[in-house]
Image (cartoon, rainbow, N blue to C red; front, top):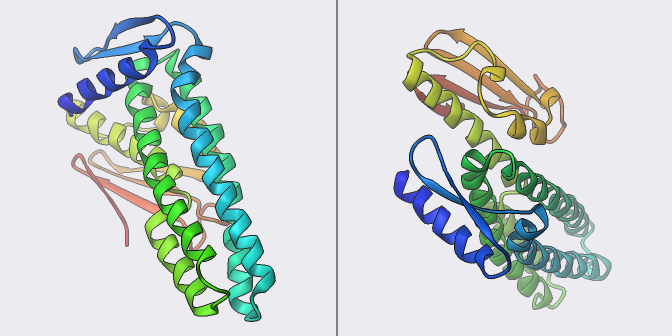
Amino acid sequence: MKNYLIITSLVMSTLISSCCRTRLVTCPNGNPVSLAKTLRCQLKQTDPVVRQFQANVKGAVDALNKVSLELTDVNIRSEAIVLKDKLTNDGQTRETTIRAAVAAMQINPCEMGQALMELLAQMNKDITEVQKLTLTIESSNKSALAVQNAINDFEVAYSLGSINGTLIVRITRALDDYFLTNNKYPSSLQELDVAYFVSQLRAERLSYKLIASNRYELKYAGLDGVIDTIDDKIHIGKDGTTSLRK
């Protein structure tokens, strides 16, 4: 993890040093983080990735919209429309989340530096998957089977809502780190430095419960946005290790 943070710092320094001055922040664990002196300059690091992602999402949405008008299979046409809407919403959510992370980094560079790099890495990975989807749809020749396979393959590789998964991991990691330091889990999330992650996920969609000093349960609402329904994502922490309940 230490090596990862050092690499993260060097990468961020390289990305932003060409456009503006930076200052070096030494984190409590001894690792350095390069921070742009202004928010505007910090955004110059992330904006090219976000713009590329949004451009590719628009290309995929256009391709899905076109094929949905051409297909005669009603079910697959409906799936194309649903995916188009999901992609549009996901693109907007990611841009908002990354911009908020950049702003938060000005306040807490040590925690947010790593989180921001993880969000950008996920976005870069998904740019490739969106490009694959667009190319496959455009070359489908209006074949319902080809479109169906393209949608199925994309949903497996892309994982809509993955940015929320990244934020959840930051919270569960903080919980496990707390246990390893204190030999117990916190009574509430307020005891951790995770306010940014909670705010991005929305507090009303999260439920943290301390079951015992060495065990906790963290629920996150699924697509319906409501806690305690069948599509909740439930993480269980025990003795400093968290896993997703199957």
